[in-house]
Length: 146
Image (tube, rainbow, N blue to C red; front, side, top):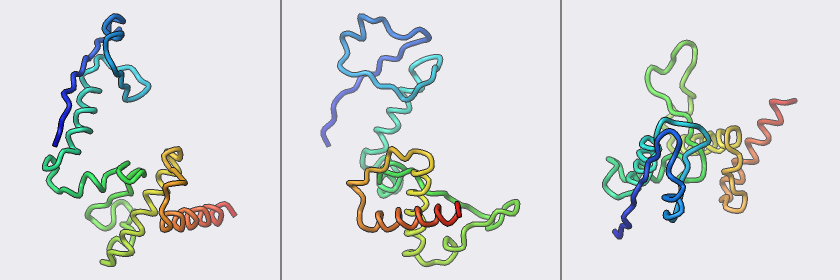
């Protein structure tokens, strides 16, 4: 694996001297908010990069199944107990039918992305299955509105 050295210059409070910014080849922002320094954003970026290195994550599939790797937000996750304060784990997740579970997860991820970050969905890149799921979601939303 080839690596390129990275240097993170972390500003404090007022930022970084403009003369230094004129010397760097890239600036990165993790969002539109103010923090006390650049160390935490640097750690966020380092963590996002490091998890892509083979062997870093315990399960090699984890990085491929995480949010954004497929272009969608992550699907909801549930743990035990099956019922918590009147809220139940969706029955499909208890069914043992892995095909249905995978379909449910993909559908929920697409639904969540539509709701929270619709700009992430690239219609030109959708698979035929994802087009079908998107159609299902639109029909369900229309039914809910009527």
